Length: 281
View 1 (cartoon, rainbow, N blue to C red):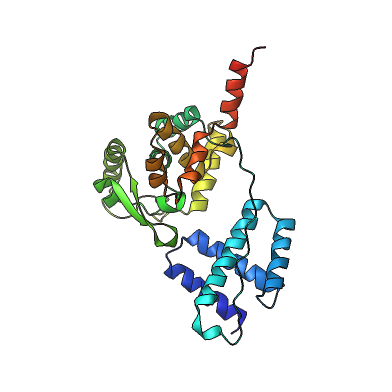
View 2: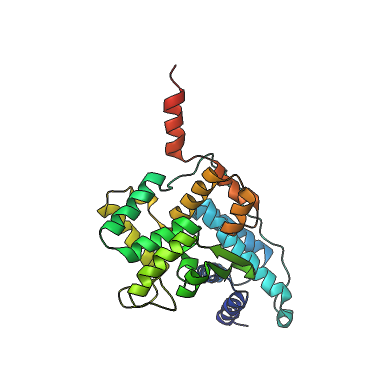
């Protein structure tokens, strides 16, 4: 089988597993990158590829590429029609990441509220609700663009996360009522709601780019104004009101509570504020 055909079949397999668009794109990129450097998938080449990744990329990217190749290995190991040209190999091990003692680049509670206030004041309600939805539900931007009027009417959105795992995004009742009133007034009574001026669904990249514009416009630190920052803010706000970290893990779609524990840590500015108040000697 030619490499191009293999990658195409692998991509189809990933979509059949209901992986997100970003994950499919990332995994197929890693596969193309591997086969561009090496003709055969064997233990020696895998180890050389890992060394190449470590020398050229950040640890998070290294592990992302390794997970992609391991997924390819699993796919090939389960494939019955490649026995004549492929011999099973072991997974590559990921590298250890140094656990940070703080969260960084998370929008502050004050800036989050200020951004919403400015967007509402300037009648940028489409973007007011985009920010509000992310900050009040913890939804990922790739999930946000799937939101429909029908979800606001029921108060929740059921989605398939990575590996086909079901997850329910809960939308606060007060936000649903406020959003529905505005969308109905705009003649939007069904279907997708995260739309651009042409009536098409906004892409995650488009959302990120526009958020940077608003950060500059309203003089908010740009490094804290990006889609995932509002997911972080939701988690931080939630834990200020409730200690139920297990529920938060479910709401965020984390497979392990250990992943969610990062939100128990303070941001860099929060740590600095505490030090300035405590250390007076």
